[in-house]
Image 1: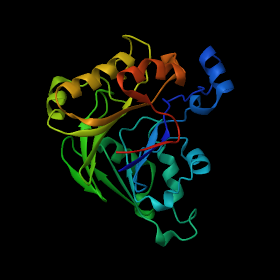
Image 2: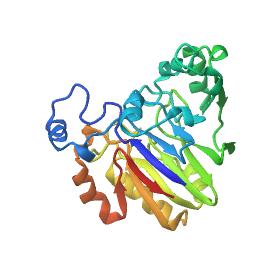
Image 3: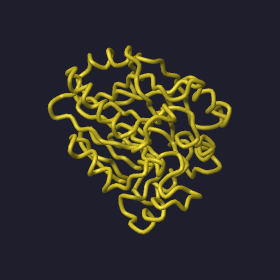
Image 4: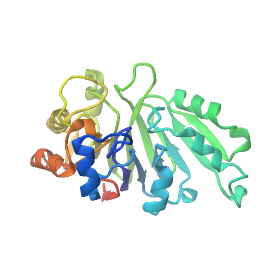
Length: 271
């Protein structure tokens, strides 16, 4: 299974859109891995996770060809993950060969309803499919199991277990700390890789819908001690915010000693 992290930033990106804080100023100077667009990933070139406002940027800079990706999987409906009005460009007014394109969209029920409210699915080459927590479905070559995320009490939000050819990935962005029931369920899996958010960086307390560095380390340790992580498992972070107060090199200093790798835009790896 090949994973491509097209974007690894939080809602405001790094440097943040309207921010002049010291971290954003330094990120503008350093560029490279310190420039972070909104979080999204592609699995095996056929499954895209989320549709952020930076999608055209990814098309232009990372050889992303959406015409070749038949499935779009939404984690939740927040603006940085679900730029739904972009779906209007699947319509025949914007495609030279509209009959050659079709997109299946999968996600929580509330996101499906948002898609139906944003785009006339009947006149676009789109089909929508609502997913249910812990119910495994087949999407192309992958088996997908939605994991409830503790991110927004007003909306259903999912992380995903993605399986193919005996390899298993947990994609956990915008997750918050899991309740005990979720930890117990995850202990039954054998995870070969985790992509997990670290939006809060150094921040302790505060907004509980995201994880900080210490929580990401604790997450790895808990899954490792329960046997859910395989010996060769990779743990990679995403969804970083300037509010976390860490540049990429500083994430490396804090995470690499724990066997965790900070992700960056354009990172690719095998599971």
